[in-house]
Length: 241
Image (cartoon, rainbow, N blue to C red; front, top):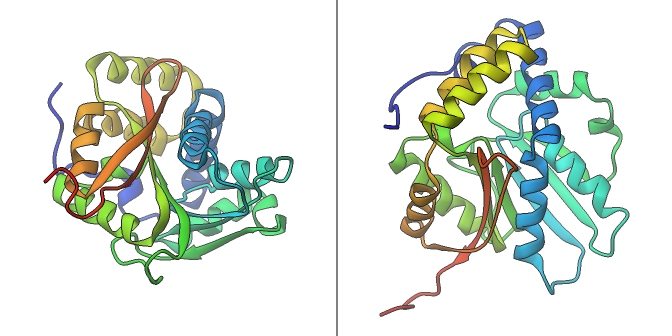
């Protein structure tokens, strides 16, 4: 299935329907929880941080509903590896909708939400242990994706985790059928199938990481293979020469 370039999702346009936006974020959080998106990130993080004691810090870029960093922070409170997370989104409307959906976002110690552009993040080198992005990379064309991954690598002390859809005709057909049953939200029903068409294959994701100077060290898929989370570390200068 050929990737669609230059397409625009409703979520990329003017967010002038707050009810539809909240419904879309609610759908995304529900799908992350039920269909393995959150679990894939958790497993990739475990692979990346194996053998490293906490506490750790996480930057979640394009946080959306902030459900994944919330889950990670709450889960870490019951583990031996505490985590503090900063979720950022480029649009204040998204964060406002997220806070309205889940009051825990404002009440959970160790979690903060900020407005920031993923293309130019306002932190110094190696400010976070891990930089994470879920369902963000497919919004970017290859050159933009490589620039973002390079920016993520700059900020990460230990590594980067990228979690996204996997493009295939089967997954496109599956999401069309699933959304027809599970939601009436116009953003979700329009953007879901288009997101699969804009997504990268696993091979393409690994190639983007390599082009940004990153080497995969752990990989976790969702149960249907429609989603993958890849943890990667910086390739040392001069490696392989």
